[in-house]
Length: 353
Ligand code: KG4
Ligand code: ZN
Image 1 (cartoon, rainbow, N blue to C red):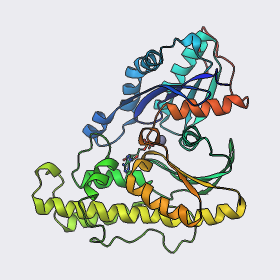
Image 2: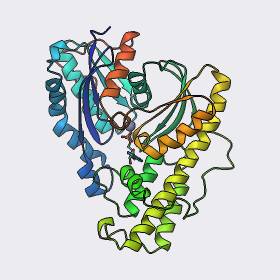
Image 3: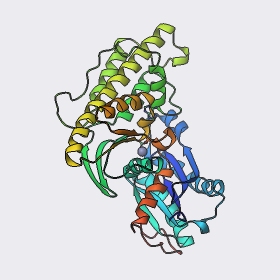
């Protein structure tokens, strides 16, 4: 089992990522090429542009992953690749690359679901993490509460009815004029540390709905209105803002973050109660996806699980945001139980399209 060596490829959104992981969980290499400058310049992901950006770097990213691991393709056991969900033009760049490598070197292919990978990478980090467990997956495009019964067997307890929390962080950062070169989330988290989280009275979404679904569109609008009513000019970057303006931006960031996370806390409490009824043996809440790299989110959710004597499992930030390690690892989990496809034809690996 430890002899397994899997290459993972991820191109579902704006990061081109590859990694090589061993069956025992050892990370041999990990490479991420981000389209952050493109994002900052155009204020979002344009599929065609993102596809081109992936195409330009995919060969180099995979080569770097092999070089850093001091391996050649011949030493791989299989190739794992994200097949969805995501932008189809972007996904295709990764799938084509995976099929070319697998076709040329006669390797099996493992199809990986991006959100399953965000959840399962927690099992690479925490070896004690057994099924069943509860998972909260929070990113730019998804907001999911899932009960993981077993590999490939999940019950969705809740999802967003409009936007995901990461989208709300990104828009808040944009409207506050924060530096978007990385992504909005970390910029809001940092500014929030200077602010008073009780100063702006945003209302908690969906209080009257006693379920595990999420909504962030209304909170986004509340933030937008709060910014407009304070006459903050987002075109003046934070670094140039007057100290008064800076502190009122910080207050909005902190108040937004507090309420955005209160919504997560409330839903997680309910989900834990539901989940314990269905699977009384659960011991862990996994929190993963880009927003899980936020320290305030982690601290607050840790309080929630402690009430139920559960353990919080949160991968390190570089495994919470999109990465190739989670794809390789989910590939390994599936490969072990025989869930993989035979090598594609070497002469025309792209003929599935
Ligand atoms: O999982 P991910 O890398 O990509 C998707 O699958 O969407 O998540 C990206 C999202 C972005 O919305 C980003 O702003 C958010 O995760 N994010 C954060 C933080 N780091 C990344 N949100 C809040 N606080 C952070 N520290
Ligand atoms: Zn993701």
